[in-house]
Image (cartoon, rainbow over the protein chains, first blue to last red):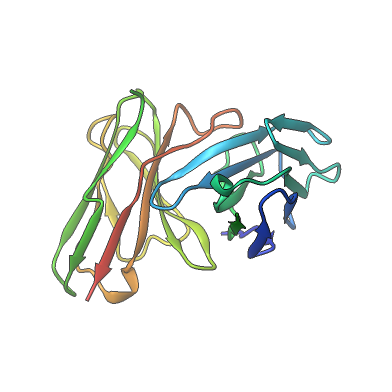
Length: 111
Length: 114
């Protein structure tokens, strides 16, 4: 199965900094999802994107569905310690296909 | 509370000793799936089920079995576990497998095979 390329693999930042991570695919996707996994828990959905060019915010989080439909990014503004965790992108090629997950971005926020 | 429940959360076992990880959801979801999470590899799908008695292989099915006799339950079976199956396992479900349906994950089951 296809694997999405997610970068960076890890980030170490200071509280208050902005964060950006992205995913790219060799295939065209019609759905992009961003999940966050807290330590010891399962992934939880942050943002879902369904249209090319779509820009969606959820509090301090903003995600965009790339115009080419082969990429997506997630931005976190003014990071706080509870933003720590692993962020996963996930994409779906067609309406009936399975989700493919990126490798994850491990975020560490220093107070 | 709507949720996906996995058991056990933690398990240490030995090579060759059959084990089952249970998964149950209370949301009347048709679609259920198992993933394993390994460092640097993200979430890889093991098996999935579109509905009762309908199961199919994911990307890494070798060494695993599943069954879907009831809508709410989707157990993962390791008939003869090996050390390379040491991993963090997640069960997930959604109403259907489709564009607008997002997955709800369980809390995970950490398995160590010695």
